Length: 313
Ligand SMILES: [Zn+2]
Image (cartoon, rainbow, N blue to C red; front, side, top):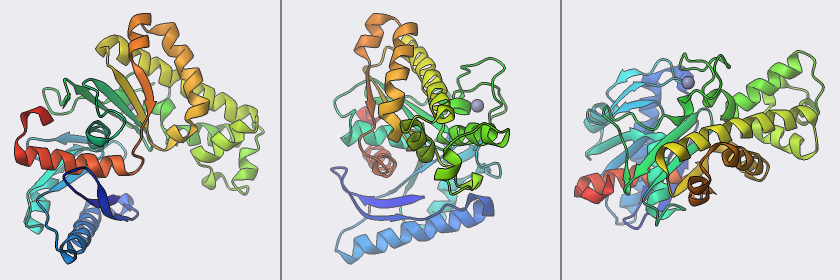
């Protein structure tokens, strides 16, 4: 988890980051969130500044009306956790909760690569594939506040099982974790690869970054998995372009570090599948704010909600 103080221009200071330790259950994670936020607030106050509100971006399906984490496919114990309510009991500030990909997109829209864009779709390729949609300059939350789950679009009928229960979701092919899972499974069944050497012979140490490095060195397994990843990402993006005709598609998260390898393959797939005019309009960009995007966006959502600025959402 990452925290920071964000000023009204979207600049971050007093950053803190620490492991989430989600396997220890929601109660311990919530304690860590509270103590991290309090540390940042102390630092802000010690410099004579003040805090208006706290914004949180959380993975999973979020009910933004009640500030509840309804469910989180990658954190199975998180079920109907009223995080906003819990946090507001512990902190003397209003708390605003949204999905982490929405926070990421809002950050990129506020001060990042999507600054002057009115319609865009964000994809974050990390543990899962997060997604967020901005239409008319506002986050599109949908009827239940849960829109934008582009990671759970089916891109391959009867494909790999996803943590959400469906088969063949984009997340099963284009997340950093799924790259590691597919490579590890292939090595276990005897496929030769230099990835194991790069990981000091330890399957547990394989990361998507190592797979990317191996692909750059021409390792056939790494190249094949990265090609498959980019192809499915292209299929997903082509669907989004045909559906929404957005000005911009923003791709972030750990796997976006392999952008130079992934993008040309994804672009071929997009050109093959999307309407040409729409595909030409949609600028496909790597996210620009790195790890700060979610912090800036969560704070921005809180800040603009406080001001009740109608153009913010
Ligand atoms: Zn899924």
